[in-house]
Image 1 (tube, rainbow, N blue to C red):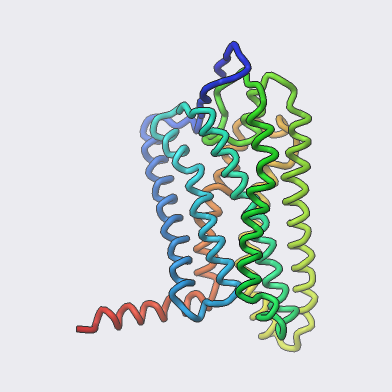
Image 2 (cartoon, rainbow, N blue to C red):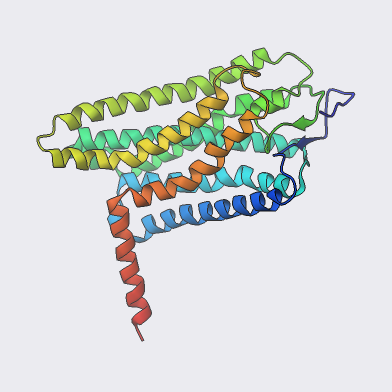
Length: 314
């Protein structure tokens, strides 16, 4: 790693991935394709929910909010990933680095809270069906969605600001974007206290939210098992399957990186796991919600018929 003689630094160097020869352009093109498909898929979900009245329900409103969030989430890190794949080690101004750190964690924690609200939506739909639309009125869902953004961007202030005030003696970040653990490895001081604070903020917030999701799905499971017919149980479970898959992908990869102390994972492991929750999960979310959801498939058919009808008109 590169050393500096002072505690402050004007820029960092993103190491990215060690790709050489013909592998570098292939990795660049593959990542670019996934990125563009991710943008297209999430935009498609947003437009579909807005255009089809059959999807004007609280669940699909929250799905569209998730897609909107994913557009920003993936765009926070993938441009620097593409730059490092194309040019190798890439300098990044420290101010830009810390902004990226803050925005990435803000969006990540917002997604965490949003997944909790989506679990609450499924719980009310299945366990309180008669009061569902009153409990999840348009005003309520807007407030819940807004609260997830406020909570996410507020909670991320603590770890981002603490990391930004560290004195740094090294400049090479063993990652393709500015993340907490790789940056803390560059500090001139012991960062164990910082990591405990990060764990308290991120771990408690996301951990409590995860426990909430498990509790809500425990209630859903009990309610579904009491349904009289197998068909009704299957229908109830099918409305939750997409959300459960997204939760499993998001939390499994995020816990792998952020649970434990710095140094508990081999250096360089974080950036490989980060590809799952920072690139793969936003790419898969639209696929999960379209291929595994009957209502979305029917909405796509209705929109397709409308488009064909408009095109046939003289």
